[in-house]
Image 1: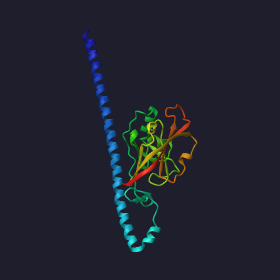
Image 2 (image 1 turned 45 degrees about the vertical axis):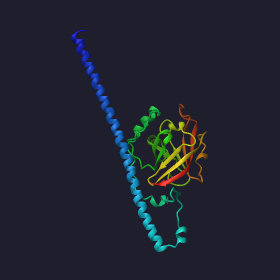
Image 3 (image 1 turned 90 degrees about the horizontal axis):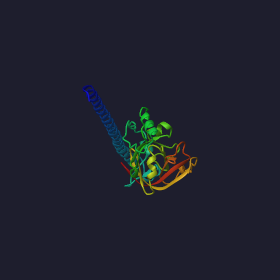
Length: 265
């Protein structure tokens, strides 16, 4: 092998080494950015929670003072606002606490894309450029390692960024049937592995609610009976089915869970 050929190979080798180092640096920067974004999101959520606790204590003191000065026990009972039962004998009224300003929508949260379709990953990354209102809650399904914000609405952009509360269903911190939709090739693909008896959590700025999966079924895409109002507090997760269907999926995959306990946080 001539000297010129050896010099050429050495240059090519150095170029590949430099390219590898550059790619490794880009990957490391991306991982650091995601980690920082996730930490900032959790800090924002914890800050909002702490503010809620402070506001709740202030309102409780004001209400107690008002009851002592202005109301008899009978009058106080008559004016009580129905609220979600909470573990430990407490309850909290969403109507009273609504004026609390929400935290901003987190810019980046670390997700496992291993089950996602490549197009859905791209749609999620594109959605990071858009502005969103604060999430209504965090949805957690420990058995499938899912934690995702719940936004309000089910338009394409919203469901590319997170999962969405279905309009007309109950709010995450209220009574009734909370309907939550997500894409079958994105956040909700892991629902294919959920089973009856698994836990589902909804965490708002004021409460943590734990539900138990009671039913999993497949329905026609126009079947809205799964979202009808319920006397019990429930959460209904909805996604398209089959999970790996090419094109517009013809059916809907439904996970229904019933509230088993809740606590003020």
